[in-house]
Length: 245
Image 1 (cartoon, rainbow, N blue to C red):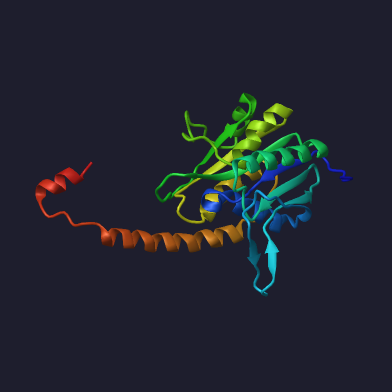
Image 2: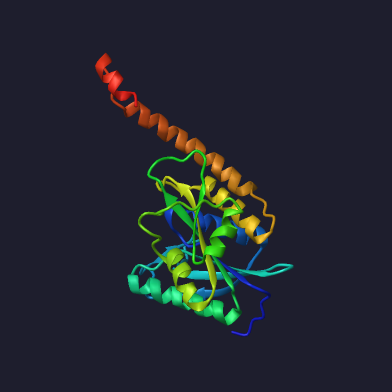
């Protein structure tokens, strides 16, 4: 593809836990007014179309947008779904890395959520990188690296891009906002975006994410009230003492 890019960086934000990465990438596309560059169709994506508000349909796909910055350009990878097959994950990740090599990408940020199984009041950003130097750099931006976390590894394109990029001499790091994993989490996305903005040395208006985060906090508050209402009441002093941990 005949496209000249200036010191480009790839940012991946496909759907995942809490839609954290997707929220961040789509917010960047909107705020930076990035332009659609590539549409990616694959038989490994779910066999369906999306029905739009006007009654027409859109074939599910992944998309790559480009934002031309003063010092460097950004490529933003988003989409409706990730691959529905193991083979597809490797095939699509390989295709994205082929494009990275073609455009001269030297660094990749993959974005996602780290599910905790419980509601998170103050999200952290956990990290995993393909080099020790990158780990130390990310720590300076507030990224937390915990031993054996995530315990189950990083599933999907966010993990594969970090792993496979090492074979192509491309620096890559995965930034994961802690989230319950139950709901779309704009609050966690805010934390990931703060870290990413520091790393990229850019300023991004977060008002839209903040408004979504406040609305989600109201929903979570109602869910917590419902959860408390369904908890069994302790009836004896002995049981009360056992309950206190």
